[in-house]
Length: 245
Image (cartoon, rainbow, N blue to C red; front, side, top):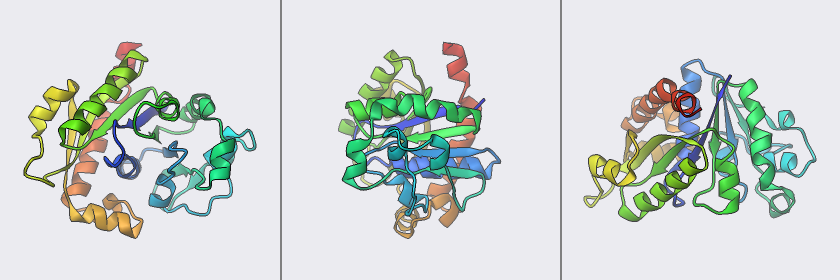
């Protein structure tokens, strides 16, 4: 039985989509069958990062009742990794019913070892429906106090809603000399710090090339950190859900 992991944050721009894509590919490299789901129904960036930009059927079609979820699963060029893309036009956004996300995504755990769900930031209804499609959640934040506190609030709400919060990723650390250090960030968040992803120009370069950094520059500091994150996720995912269950 696969694991459903929502990737969430309190603020936009923290690197959720980058984390989702790199985590999915890192898990695929480790031999796991992975499906990355673009559940950010208004922004839809994951598909582009994963190299799928011309999908006929998207998660929006499924949520509009016009297609089956299996018709929206696409193989990527990355080993063992599939993606369910989202549409980028407003017509599709209007037709899709985000309330159907949890029931649509949950059956995917029969097919894949890991289903990684890229969720919108914040606690609006679209974001909640996307995040609640998972059984576990990975929070992504930057080392700034406003970002940390907003993401902490999201974690508290999701915990109360019954999700197992695996921990958080401190992304883009080292960008500024005012960055909050990892140990202080962990105190603010009150959940385990799973990985520090350093500020790494190769990550940005990879994004511009449309290739996640674990594939684009596997020996870069950012890529190595994402690989370590994947190893940690393999070790702990499922465990907290079982304990809570």
